[in-house]
Length: 266
Image 1 (tube, rainbow, N blue to C red):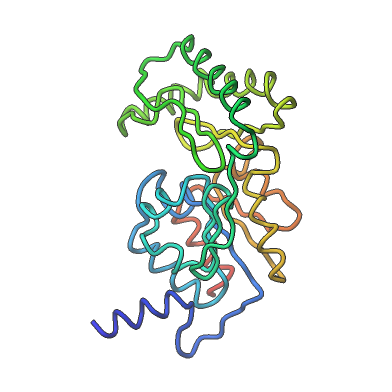
Image 2 (cartoon, rainbow, N blue to C red):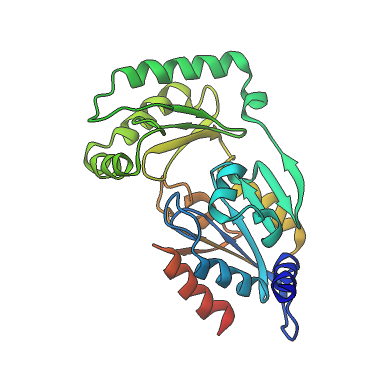
């Protein structure tokens, strides 16, 4: 038990006896599809690997979901076992286990504009014809709105079915185009399709590049980013293609592990 506690302490501080850590290299990781299967918890194998990686370099996570979901997927101690934990694209930022930044979508937009936007969304969704509708179509998060045509209350099976359906039907794509036309310039909003069933709405510049303003101050020689939705329109695209990062596209946590092994551990 003492050995286990010692290992957990080393994981928290990123130190292991006899290992040289390069504190000039930072690797940032998307969560869904990069460290985990979408919406699933990290596997013990991947969790252990990330601990090993942190002995060699500085490691951070940057996800679109809120901190509650990040903890569900990566562990309650996510803010301790990664050097940086950025939830909601960095609008909630932790470094070395301490909260150092928060920002709010509601404060940015104001109640009147927020209400106008949500009313438009609900009217639009009422006319969308898809095989199944459930509940929680609009989820308010601290730094964004998450909009789901099927509703976030759907089952895993319904989620998978909608993802397959939307590949051809392009429901989310059409809805994003309509919202962008109505609100993009007027409210300075950006839209990003991510995950299986939804898309995010946030002010321009509040994509995953938002977190880079904090890490670039810390003077890294290299900032690597790993993500699966790195195509134009995906929620990893902006940070992946940002000149401040070295971008890596992955299709699974296993591929993330393989590339990191080659780059940092061999």
